[in-house]
Length: 230
Image (cartoon, rainbow, N blue to C red; front, side, top):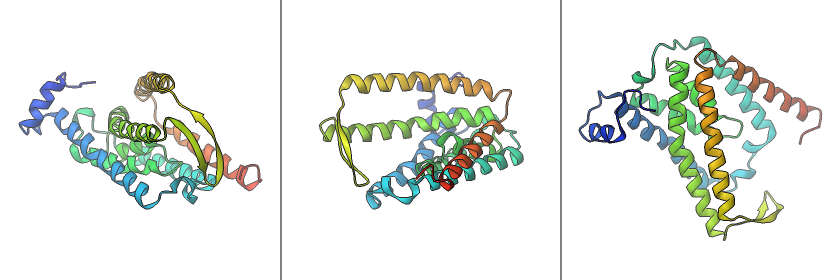
């Protein structure tokens, strides 16, 4: 996970000394700066739009549209991206660019990894470099989101209940064992997925994901149009 072979301690010392010529320092700053947009956007939504879960943005039509739009943007990035910069050439501003794209994942139908990959390719990063940095960038955001949800769950006495968009929700107790198993399993499968994707992008493009997102969005619209989905 350390392209230059530097330990976290070495990177920390270099960061304190302002050694911005060290690639890992630029990447660490990029991850920190890139986390700000999604945190700021998430807090804004939580405060200003408390019923966001029931907003039109979470409708099937919105999800289908977002899926198709993001597929087209990824296709454009594949076509115009020069893919001339490797992982060691990632800058702090690249982190901000990918972070802004990551914030779009708050909109249902927008894939976090897909949005950041699109941004990375648009910034001329190689596919593997963009993918690797995308997943590192996601660690703080996903961790913070998990902590917020855990705090909310604790305040409710580890019970999922209430209403969702006006509909009654079944009361479900949640214990520590369930949380631990869920956390460990998601961590293991996420690691395996990341390892596979990094290997995949060494020899393949992202066109398969473009067609998948287009097909997914088209099928949703078809289901909506035929009345199968509401």
